[in-house]
Image (cartoon, rainbow, N blue to C red; front, side):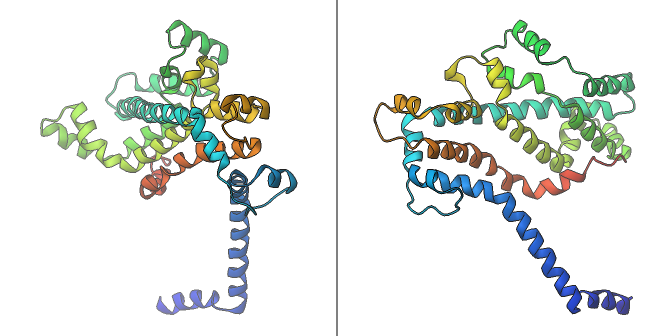
Length: 298
């Protein structure tokens, strides 16, 4: 076995093996650069002057670094206020979606639940057929949720696809573990809260990240359900900033500073992107494991 291992390892130490490694690393580095280049360009553009942005087609390092675009954002306060509102909606919405999804998935994973197959068929039905935008809007309106942040959370509180993955994850738990908890006097709710959820940290972290990113980046729901500009979320404000002309931007600050129109758009994109990127490192250790758990039916 040791000799066989050495022979396999020696294959990668040959000149051809080293060339293959160099080619792979170079190709992956190229793909990585192509992925990061747009983001780096936007970052460089947010720190560049308006003249440089209009005269240079593409650059990653600005010649003259300026923070006028970021000064404009923080002076007006519109972007900062929308970011605070979006952060609150993201935190509350993620908790709501996690609670609804996991509390529904656990009963569906229990074979003792009567009507479980019927409920699963109804869940699958919603994946294939949806009411559409107008019926959903009418439901939200009739529930009195227009111009409330609940309209951004409740309609998508349960994702059928995520629900099925979580159900398969719960099915992997040994029945002996659940039965032992019941013998010790633990109720179904106690088993779910004290045993099942603590053992499901990877998948909780994974779907928390998915839900948080989805809520943070969602602008369509806020654009439809919220008509009050003072309640707009970050992505709606970002859309408005990108669509505004330089004249309208000047009207906002009323001559406080010279508005770099394109740089402000780039800076707003950076401000809207960086906060959600900062969430990933806190969930990274659970993310890789959570991506696989529950994806294979046990």
